[in-house]
Image 1 (cartoon, rainbow, N blue to C red):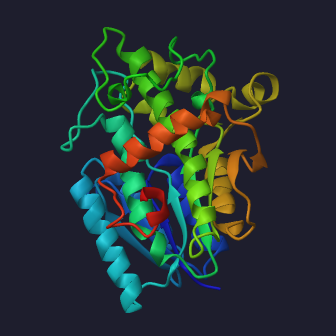
Image 2: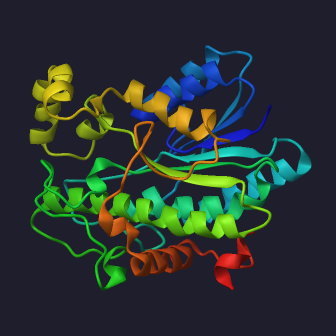
Image 3: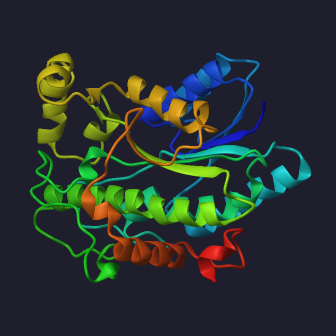
Length: 333
């Protein structure tokens, strides 16, 4: 068995562990790891290179891909498609959309494409990548894995007093207003991202199942758990969040997991599950939402059919996808 596995955000906290688990456990696959910066002075990317070096027989490569630039995303998709067509890469077995971005210190940031950076990096760019590459999946099918989160649920959070929502004015997702509460609104933008990601998966699966050439491709969204050791709690966050991780999350992780949140765990555990669901179970035929490796129910808001339709249509528009540049033409008839 062979195939290409594309993992975005491969040098993130969970991404590094996912990368190592993929190389160690599934060496038959060709790994295409994407990172925001492939510079030789990038500490996190060098950690990824060190992991690859531990598996000299591995078929793995590191690619710089700025998900905040759709021109770069479409160019990367074109390159991967050409390499598969030429036989340089085997057909795709899995696309794992692990990359994300948040900033809890500033007002909403816009990308070069004019979209909220959190939404573009974590969703819009992945929409473009996935829909551009569908025709290059293995004829045996494969898996698309989206990274959801417990934060997509419309309930209280320690990070923000605001629930995630799909606003009536859908353009507020890509152009969120400034607000004095930087942390609260930044965390809400992240939660909105995860709500959108989870919601988008459902029409994706419906269209794939209706397509006679693509029906063997399955899409899942995973809540990989709350990662107490994640770099996310040390990047673009207030000092209070950094202290919370240092003084509470990391030292009391076993107690938090036992008495408060059974999904609270290390990024290593999350990375392993991400690969197991995205690659190890790529041919199990299952679809839908998972918490860790267990089928679960998403927030009821996710199942709103009208909102799903809107998110599907707007996501394609934002990602610059139409019937001329995707194999999933049934979705644009």
